[in-house]
Length: 252
Ligand SMILES: [Ca+2]
Ligand SMILES: [Ca+2]
Image (cartoon, rainbow, N blue to C red; front, side):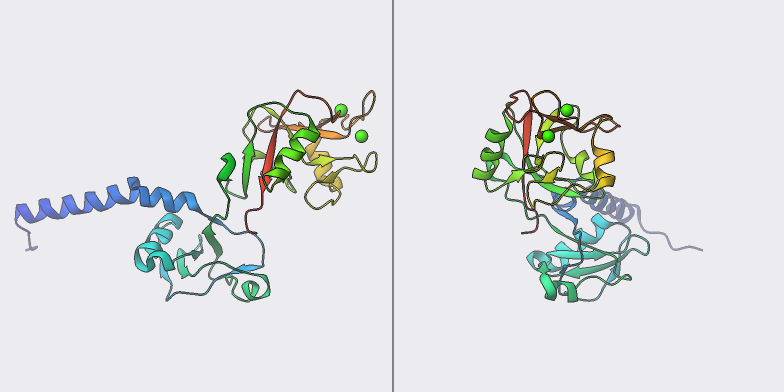
């Protein structure tokens, strides 16, 4: 015959279990962990392993246990979503040293707190595939004024090297971004590094028949997220009609 616990003990166990589940689902810790840790892209980042890996049923669970176990020492985790392997990590290392500490394929992907200076109304925004530290303006501006505004905040106008990053912007509204052909007509370059937009991205980015350098000339760019189709357009740089988005580096 199966051993049965007295009713008060069963009640206690159920209550404790419900409390733990509630904590994991609703505690500010869980949402904090989910919000502030994000996937670190690129091969130049890694971290020291704080201890042995374990199996976690989810990435938030992995992060939470790391924080609970190692407190502020836990500054990153490596998580393999296929196997559930969770490896606790130290603060983020970058450069050659970081590359040497990068996660192995067994360890999965590296996650670390965002490095986003959130002063001046900047926010850290993430999606499943990318992230950015941005500030979407509340008022319209010319390109030059927007450019200088961002520069004064230690930022540049928003740039994107893949279309998934566009999704990080507020949807349904056109924004001036850091893509211009001011230097060489017809050659659009990103403001942060000056590199030319790739042919493939240009096709995905601009609306059909754009950029057209219409009328007296159009050297600046506006784009709208969430349209489901290419929305980029070149327009006059002194045109004061659109809001703009500044961007600060995430892992500087
Ligand atoms: Ca032009
Ligand atoms: Ca145009």
